[in-house]
Image (tube, rainbow, N blue to C red):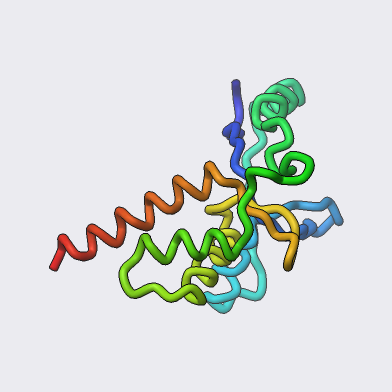
Length: 148
């Protein structure tokens, strides 16, 4: 396939922006947050399109979209509540309080490290991605002690 498109099945929290002609462009929230923290008031993107065809685009979109990736099953029996995730995460990192654990889980959701659906009391977190994220956090915590 020609062109700069890489198929991905990662669900990313994004902000809907628009180019100078009004065409909507979803930009990852973490990217916009980084730009703002650096004091930028304008961002210019150059996206190479030479060699890219509509066929390439359609083929990539079909391969990249997982079935119902962000929609938990009806009733969400397997998806986890924020409080459950925080209680589990407290056991992963030494000295972590439940409040700090909730904050870390929420940050991971905002940055796209975790997949979640809903808001407030109806917020649910996808368990497979959460388990992988917990493992990364535990390994990071153990490495911190190994480096001492």
